[in-house]
Image 1 (cartoon, rainbow, N blue to C red):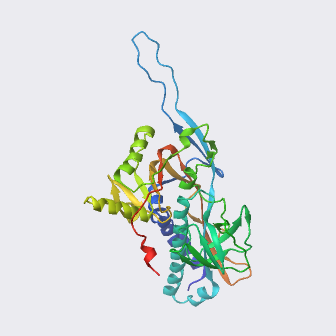
Image 2 (image 1 turned 135 degrees about the vertical axis):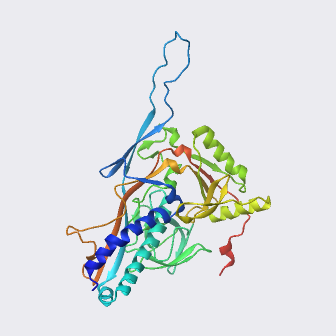
Image 3 (image 1 turned 60 degrees about the vertical axis):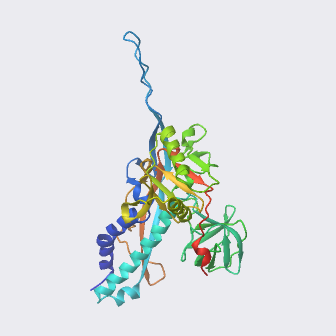
Length: 396
């Protein structure tokens, strides 16, 4: 007979390992390339020594000259707080009782819940990788009749709950639930439990997540930030990555210029290129125009993609339309207190009744932060022009 204890056992012993593997390797092509480590985690913080430069104790001289002076490697200490990442499922008491004598129905019940959790978590993990840690989803351009027009909607999806902020003050007492995203006109429709006033310039964040997300590429390439990981960029200029505003169409030369700069000036070997689907289509058009063979590589997690001189070029929905990132993923690490785990109560239970409701919930948790040891070894090209038509623009 199926009981809550049966459900807990399945969540702990069957689903946890599968879900953790899917979120670590299949959530996003970039995440699959980044190593995950429990090193350098001290309490609630990550404290990591990042080396820069080389050992200066080298030289040449005659057989009677003094030996070279010693000079150790340069190090700087990165300090960052672990971020709290959550995923929650909910099962009604009625559903559990209805499947009590039908193990197949029970398995389907749990499988559906876990698949939904994986989809939602994968979307948000992928989004965070390209975010700046603030959790900013979009900026409002206009709003009327439960419809909001934004500067971009690639971070939005149906079912997402979002908070509205004016400056640094939250104006929505309950989150907006997105019911439809119009990706052609960059707008979305929503419902909410309470009335809310939304005006141009307001900012949208995932519910309760403002300033609590992992520090993604947006943080590394934030030119307005004076520090990163607690270290001043003015004192250590190598913390500034390579950026370029191309204002031209994509080409092998444009890409190779950035690759060569990082190789010769930063000793960084680019092994991963990420761009918008619009930029990738433009690159495919460029290759086709010159009748070149388009080489395809298979990445971790089963992803297939085109390449530039053997470097995978991956399209990601969370990259801005005119942008390309060139990364050495060996410089990145997702430091974590532990891998994905179920949040347990004092009694060891993971399924808990929601106060005042005939439902039970379980929460998946991970405490982690993304650190790049060598920000100067990464590149961002923006302003890439494209003559390729947006396929969504022709759809109703």
